[in-house]
Length: 101
Image 1 (tube, one colour):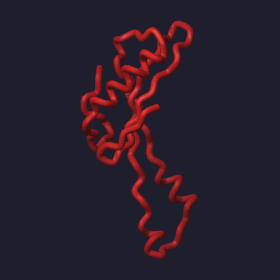
Image 2 (cartoon, helix red, strand yellow):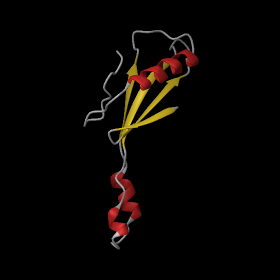
Image 3 (cartoon, helix red, strand yellow):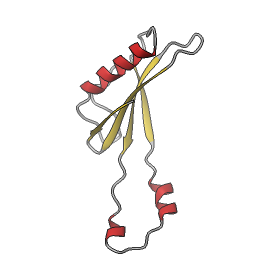
Image 4 (tube, helix red, strand yellow):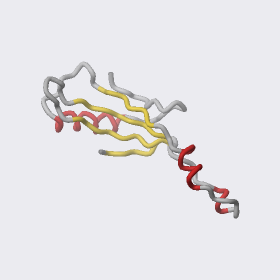
């Protein structure tokens, strides 16, 4: 998996292995980066169990090159890596700009 940090989001490229009649697939996934806790630095009470549960960022996977049939996971990962290189921005909803079809 490859990762890029863009506009407060972690953007990850990955591919899946072919399974039976399902070919290898390429994905981009975005996840909002959690802001650093400033309350702990200011001497506030630390409640890590509550903070981690409520602050866990939700990831959004986007399948890319849906119309393309990859011969293997290596070819799919190469396409995902190339798509990640073309991503220049991520909007407020976590959708990468220059998202391939």
